[in-house]
Length: 235
Image (cartoon, rainbow, N blue to C red; front, side, top):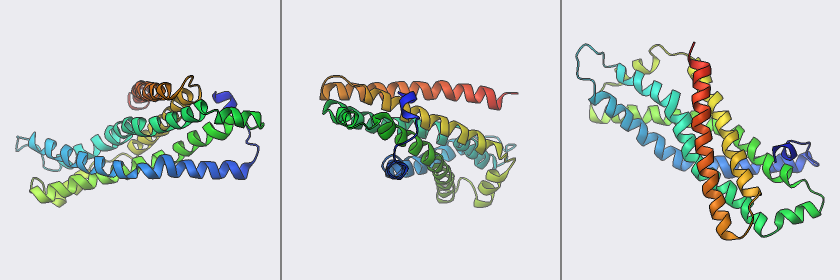
């Protein structure tokens, strides 16, 4: 499928429009759920970290430092991607599966259109483009949520939390997170497209294909997450 998808588009103008549409459908429309999850998870991480610091020897800014490391390295890139594998992955699979069972893909092939290139490639490229921005958005919201709950509950001062966010910051952490994000976006879009594109049967099989797409996308994300972490973070 990828061999047919990654070919030169017949009409670049149409292909560009398709990519922009997919950025909106797959990325921008997912901002709402990312906003809610990131804010509240940032709050929870901050509260849990602060509540587990019992020793006076541990500085208060450790809360901000731990929240930053947790959100930037793992929560935003991996957990948000797993959640979007369920939302975006099922959307891609069900869309292509519905087109397959209603013979719309067959109609495109009869008209001489490379259906893989026309339908699949814009989804892959569009999601690979927008997901890093979504993850950065999630990081900011998570850290902001931690700051808000710290101020509201009084568990940590604003100065201590912000100092913790800045303490021993390594820009490579952002690079590492975004590398994972791009790979996760490719996995979600390609695996989901595969299961949707090759559906056989009716609406029941479309539902089963969507479930398989989410399951295998999630498994692949966890496996790639381990490999990337092993390669980039362990000397």
